Length: 306
Image (cartoon, rainbow, N blue to C red; front, side):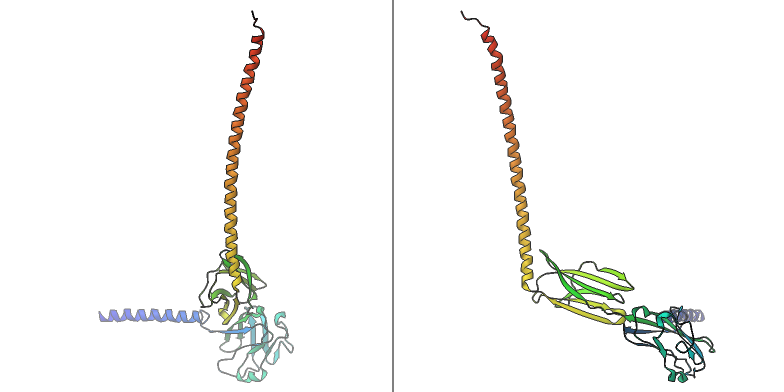
């Protein structure tokens, strides 16, 4: 009996070990085990993609191949020859922008540097040593961020308040926008408008604000993938909120005026109808009287007086 319980415990431990190992591999990028190194850089900057063989052996005479998204050839090295001194096949996107650290090859370092990065450089890179025994392959995820500069405008003034609009353009990766008051509390806002062009994002967020002690409001832009946060503030003058009050009074007065005109119009219409009805009845009675008098005249003229 004790042996059966022990066996069940071992089975459960083995199950949880396999589950944790599977989740660890997923977290580190791939089901088959290798880790994925994440590299973040801002557009226009140079970036180093790291790659070193496990045993740090001299790779000056070895072959290694850098590729993007499994297809584009980024940089190829073969025993001293490479894309910058004779080899062909490098993708046009990377020509003249990629180089290695020649003095580091003897230490097993196959890292490359990409200069003047662009958003389109973002993607999954591999550094592959196909002829080593055993073969070695490394995975790097590059994110080239384009941080936006938010623009705040006063869109319009309504009786509900002042409508503010925050716009970011040409951003990557896709940013998240929020409106906050001076206390840092998130404000209710309209549905975020997102459009994509050229692999980048344009985002618009509107909110309606009312008078506060400071009348200061903030548009917050977050890009979690690259760890970038930017804020833009706007302080509104008191006059804008007075305009909101005036707009409310104007609309209220306008509505009241419309209602009054509607009531007056209805009364005039009813009076007019009654007048027409009475006039019509009077006309009919008068016409009947004239007809009776006309008919009586021949009778009178036919009566002879004696």
